[in-house]
Image (cartoon, rainbow, N blue to C red):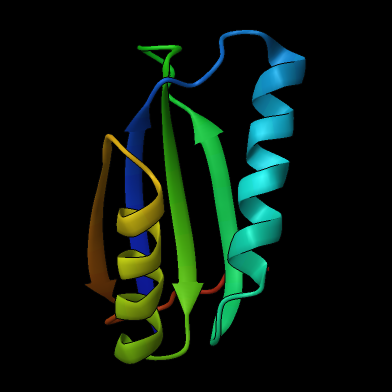
Length: 91
């Protein structure tokens, strides 16, 4: 598994608009090949910054998502992380 990690400026500080932005990004991203799960949220120290974590099946899927986002979104910083260990929640 791989995780695309993103950071972007320009997030609305209005809660309803921010949620709408997250929902739109989630809908687009969910259609990506290899999509497993995603998380979108605002930065706790800078309300105009958002962070995204998207888990995908393969490196090829992660690279394709990264390329698609970079071609369509300005001001975004993306990294790909290979998941080396998953630790389940304890009972």
